[in-house]
Image (cartoon, rainbow, N blue to C red; front, top):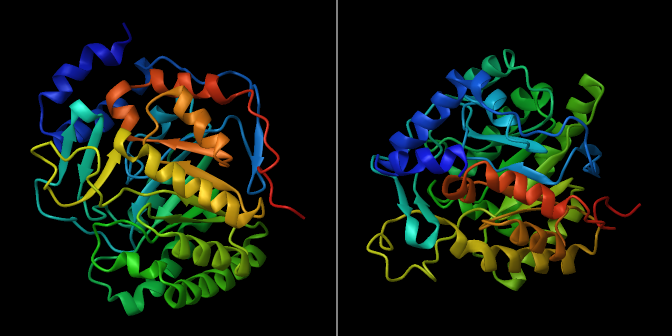
Length: 347
């Protein structure tokens, strides 16, 4: 039995958000006692977005919004870590309670609402961490910022995250910030990506390196919307797409007493829905832009299935809550021999 299996009953006896905070702070405090799972040498490195990833398995945004435990999390063996979502200004997020476990479904419902300490606090923490692997910084807009001014918040986030990030993820798909998903609409998305691409190019000239941008989209999109988003990604030369965020659907958990809680559903019930989006993007993008798959991965076989659907990289989060660090190792082992021609955009 692994160590996490011993502690999980205790953690699951606590309120979900309290257990989350306790775990992150505990990992940071006792980092030196954590067994290092990371391989000493990359076994099958893969190049995506011009970056060399030691393996294909990453930590999704949301688990460590404020970079509390990046060094500790890196010991689990991830090929990359994504932190955030972070906003220009600190904000408390939505009222409590806002995080719910559905253990019988290996699922989570959250309506956190981008609770974070702000981008300035985040970069001050990043100046102190030892982790030198691939770090994604996931940025969003403040709740109080009108949707018409959302681009301003993303420009601030990109500017401040740029020198600290290996790549920057643009979160326009959380269901827990009012109207945020409207940024996925064609005209709003064109405006946002146009402005961000211009700023990315100017920052690349200023700093002497191009930091890739990845757009994170929702699973609750129809075929026409996915095609429109794919066209926008190509048109604005965005470096990658992350598919997907949490879903508003309650398919598969209808019988749960928590199914009526507002928020995004993640975990095992999301797997098929999010993987379908990956397949649709794969068909629409035709290998021109790499896909980072997230949503419902609770086993190594499911991580491999994401790659089979067309993804180049895979992120986990909710599965980690239920299975612990053993899931990271299992997913790495299941995907380390994967060979794909879609890891790099076509020249």
